[in-house]
Length: 323
Image 1 (tube, helix red, strand yellow):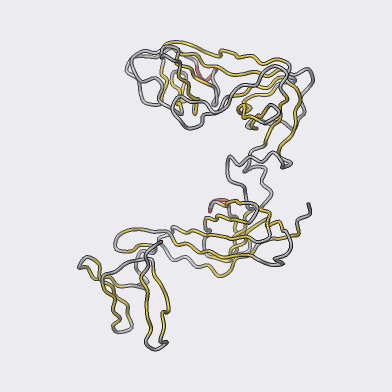
Image 2 (cartoon, one colour):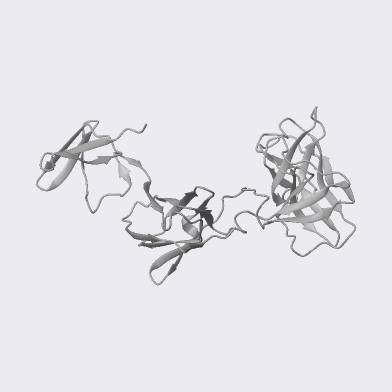
């Protein structure tokens, strides 16, 4: 349980407030409030002071509130509106869903801030309309897009080889396999820095010159693919949907995918499907957001400004949800 400083009012004969900062002593004098910390005197509520800062440490301001109109009905909470002089970061939680709004996503219109509630990145729900069936894959092949041997003197999380042309042959999301290591270790290309250097999501080229291949997986179908598919969609396959990777390229009847790192060095979370597997895709959870569904919505707002921030009211566009 968090520690708080409680204040008592003899006039009210009760505890009137609590504070998240922890002074050694508190005193009021000449209509000003002072506290002591480690022998230093601090003046509070000073208009010239740095906001969100206590005893030399900067903190965030947080506010929590609940929307609970028509509590017996399931609702869609679509947007959030702030009557404020600055945008706040927002996390929302309902009894069925959750979402977020980054402060940079708010748009200021007629003096107020507006933004759509978006799902968290990586949220996957196969029951949503953002999940679409593609069909049975005919053949699955692995394509070696490039290969070589790294230069000596490795740099952490980089693949470097002089004389290469990575900007023409490699894409973000391709799989790099260290063929010198035993057993082989893999990483994902996180950025194509130049013709001679790649950034990897994991340091697999750690000692001297290392052999490598850079691969992508190609799915071929016996029909022309629908235009609903997009680069960046996540691929799932099988009767119990299994993550297969992310689409990096689309042709008339082929999809190129990259496997997906699970964040552990040398470990790939996605696994390629097999011939005949049924393929479905899930759209990006942020881009395909629809709001938050639930009977109520709890909202937590966070502000890290060091200047004065005022928040007067919070609103949301809400409508009844129909199953």
